Image (cartoon, rainbow, N blue to C red; front, top):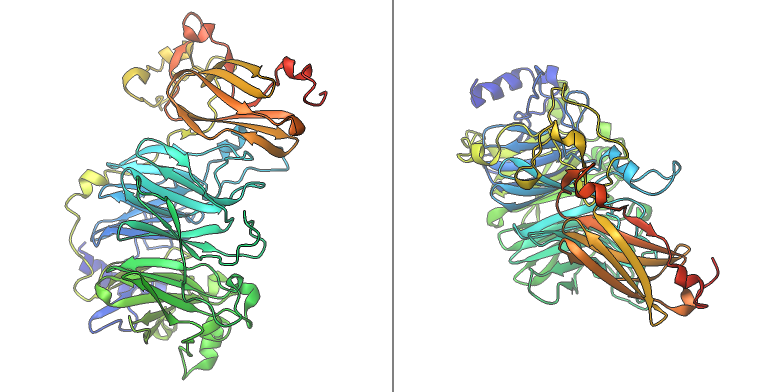
Length: 612
């Protein structure tokens, strides 16, 4: 069936399917349409894909989206667009509200949900379930899932939920999100340097990072400023809503973007929500609405644009957003829960070529199942040139129901945009006759087949089993083949175990207050030593990356704040090798797991610390 025939069939069946078809004009020729909603395997009709957290394009005929899934038909995962249709790319690495970061034409990262198995690798109790939403990473390249990254919960350097992701290239990517755990101050951030992930928080300000975008050789991250955010300097008066990140090798790494024209007279930064960001044509756009708690008070829909280093307010206190449906105020009230200027901004998408920006609004308090998409097209001069309601009133008369509020907008070209909703419905803005661009000629190279396997999470403790692995020789699924030195047959693994990451731990005090810890690493790993007195961190080393072999860390301790616990945190950066459990190195190795270290006996007799 050709794409043209498929669209025609969906148009005839819209009232039965609830599929969102053409809406009002978005330009001379381009219109919004939902007729390109994918039909999942095993289904006769298009259905919602589940909550879509992000939709991103490398080119008009090469795009990706990440979804939480719509069980049982659609698992949480990643979908790809090839210029003609959307198809499922990965049934793993989906997310509750995930993000996508392209790093090369066939390479990208996703912010994904953790797996339930992570709970068994985390300290805590049954009353404290490890969080799993949006706190792991997946790295895809060449049509394969190369690696998955996670970290145990309830530790000082645990991965926090991430809301922003962007790359300078294959060897320079950033991921950012919630504030660090107390008593640390800063925003959680991870940096991929081409070989490993390193924690590089934005210290000093504990605001959650909510969006990340690239523009002209820098990354820009927006933060949510809330009352009660921890600050290293309590007397700090200016709270920048955007930070800049420079590429690797350029110092300083972080800079604050100051003097944004966001607030009105007497308006506090906490009254405005975070800026949704979108970049195109040398311009960076940011849009935010008022905080929910501030509806009816300070704060209002605000739209700003940065071009050639200068920020301009297009909508906001100086230029308030007028009624978007002046002839139907009751409909505007029903759609947005009040005046448009008090609505919540849910997405923003800039069109290349300076054509303007699409701004999505929603009611602050509404059932998403009953929400409709409310879209404004704003010109580069700040004029609202169009208002779109999807699905339209005419479509509702034909039986097309609400499809949820907008969650993401991406415009790979002028008059070519995609919008995703919280229920997983897609709308495409394009001129009639240009909705199908032709297949991506390199799709078979970059996106080959459905990815169904997610490898073990790098960064979680890998503890050797207490007993030989079960006999699985009769099972259909074979053990994964890592290749090279790690390749083992299914029968060989029955007499082998994985080497522990840590072994041969020895500690001693040097000059009374300096702890020297020696250990052996089986593979390259990140290591950090943290000393705590009860729950308070009293000393810690920086995170160090060591190659395999015998290594040591030293930590200076304070006699007045002597620790009661030591925590050696490790993050393996390569698979642990298999060795013989009977006659080989595995039989001679004393296994050590990551986590708490027993305090040296000499400490008890030093007279510096308390008697334990």
